[in-house]
Amino acid sequence: MADKNWLQTDDWKNEKHVPVIECPDEVKKGELVEVMVSVGKEIPHPNTTAHHIKWCDLFFWPEGEKFPYEIGYTSFDAHGASVKGADTSTIYAEPQTKYVFKTDKPGTLMATSFCNIHGLWKDEKNLKVK
Image (cartoon, rainbow, N blue to C red; front, side):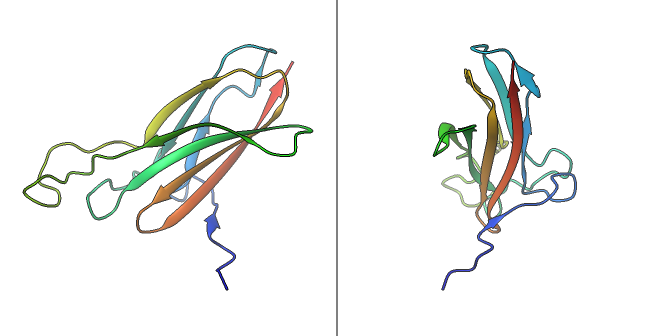
């Protein structure tokens, strides 16, 4: 049987793997919502060949809807590897991305991130619409 703690959560101020959702708490109907998602805001996450954030995504679950909508997915593919081996290049992607969308309904933003060593992490934030 699968472990029930496969989707991990914590306070991003104490745990470097938790995605951080940054956006206004409230927007106007139909207004563009700009959402920044990052991992390692308070405690930097190592982004090496051996230990890195591979991807993150953002969902929005409008109030009254049965399922959430995927707003976007971002893959971070450069982790210092080159044809010479692990951590031999100078290119390291940082797990930060911006998503933009519109909505007429309030709901919940949900971001997930995946660490190649420590698995899947989630954070949520409510969004009000006036």
